[in-house]
Amino acid sequence: MGLLHPSREELEIAKVLHAFSDPQRLCIVRGLAGDCAPRRCGSFDLDVTKSTLTHHFRVLREAGVIEQREEGTARLNSLRREDLDARFPGLLDAVLAAAPAPPPAVVALR
Amino acid sequence: MGLLHPSREELEIAKVLHAFSDPQRLCIVRGLAGDCAPRRCGSFDLDVTKSTLTHHFRVLREAGVIEQREEGTARLNSLRREDLDARFPGLLDAVLAAAPAPPPAVVALR
Image 1 (cartoon, helix red, strand yellow):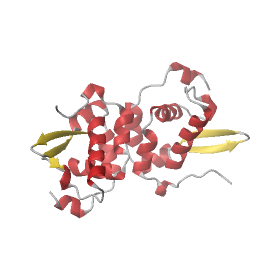
Image 2 (cartoon, chains in turn brown, blue):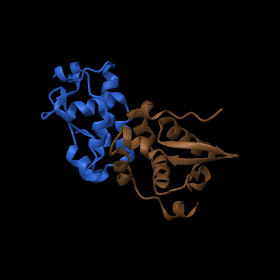
Image 3 (cartoon, chains in turn green, purple):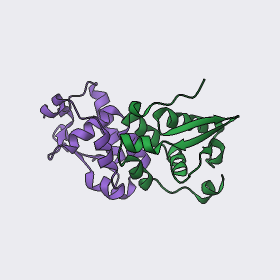
Image 4 (cartoon, helix red, strand yellow):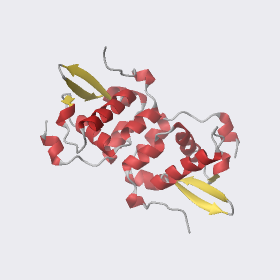
């Protein structure tokens, strides 16, 4: 069974804002926004347990902020920028502009 | 003792996004955005208990989204648009554009 992703039409502003409303999830979103290729969950150097990291990625996916694709035992993550921009124009850019830049380690650990 | 309000410099993006991330709080924010004059808490026709309403206003105030001023036994609420726009350019407008319009009753009940 595949992972649950809401369609573009199913995105809800309150859920998307909730997904953005955590410093670590914001860090993930910023990291994905700066990348062309999808990234593995483990490529984010966040100081949290694996289960917390999995939780953060699930919140982001279920809100429709990211797409997760399974490749072997890994999950590849990408930002649903087009869907977010279509439904909530300007929101993602405003959030990215406001979110603090990730520390260099996050950028280096691909 | 007055009510706690973070200064403009103290505003945090994650807290502000969390304050926005509830449908009823979004309704309050939209209502305040459409108004020139401050509004009493009781002027919002939300289907919640008084204590829930008080909680929502407190979350909004402590995140720096609204200013609350005590006038007798009432609290007058206004949106901190200038502070939000200064710290997080485009965010409030994007959220307001994405948030569903309040039902007519909310507009009528001043």
